Length: 388
Ligand SMILES: NC(=O)CC[C@H](N)C(=O)O
Image 1 (cartoon, protein in one colour):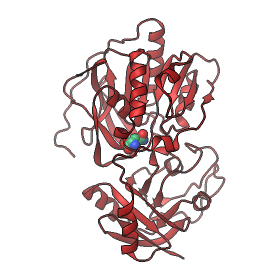
Image 2 (cartoon, helix red, strand yellow):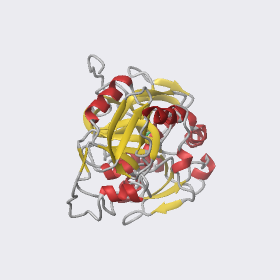
Image 3 (tube, helix red, strand yellow):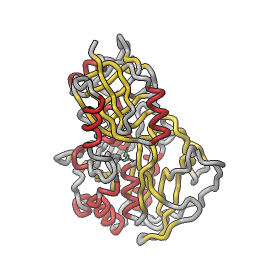
Image 4 (cartoon, protein in one colour):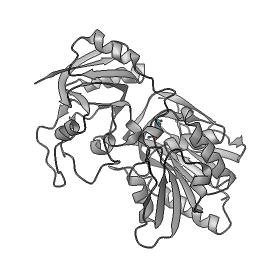
């Protein structure tokens, strides 16, 4: 058994065993509370440059399979678990997580008190961290950690985006065509759209509005993605062009933050972010509470109690996180655009929010009928009492 060391930027140190590839890595320490879906987490491009701490104590129980990857590779900068499964067992498994982490060069640590680590991050906020199964001196590792780039100001979408455009065909009859700006897109998203008859043309993060609109798509999609939305000016510019063209637009997570910025709203870094599969969100349009999957460290800054005037008309907060009143969705009242901060495409679930893809399809359908500026019903008010 090989020892490993974890050092947080504030000096707190944990010791454990090497897990995954042997080596040294640094990144932003974040915790994820999902009890399932580790394969999707590891392969979600939004986790690029983040060291993910799993709060669920047993990880790897169902191994890995050839179907659940959210992209072409694992992106996490490091992986922290309590107890790796000794023997995976699942009818879909094609291998073990341990072997896959080694094969993909992901440095991890196991045997760590992940509860103590998570409480530390909750109390002090997300921060930089290093893991090493080579360096044994905490001060030496700490020097590497403090030399690492911060997540604030990091422009990471170009590093994960596709180099070349590609097409995900509709399942069955093709009814709509969309252009998707790949800021770190997950495979589950075009799959959900394909099931609704949507053909998705995925374009690199550098695509301009003209490129997105080149083939006359029914709508434009803005994907999830890693990094600080404040650093992605090129995407903001592209979205403004799409809004000018009044083309139906739907964004998820990073896409929600980019739409917010395109409308003139600000974004800010949350103390420790939302990462998990059971986050309650109020859909203020229908008055429904949905249990949703989250992975975000930044959020849009917008007033909850009134619409905001923007160069594209008014926008209102359509969804609110019930744990902490964070903006979880935007809805434009005068242009056909909306977005959510959480993940309707979520695999391993939950699927409460999946109908949002149908809302995008409905928006494209009404735009075809010349009725693009949908007149929405008023939002419902709520009170969560004291902030969490
Ligand atoms: N999943 C995402 O798209 C994450 C968006 C952004 N990088 C954040 O951390 O908030």
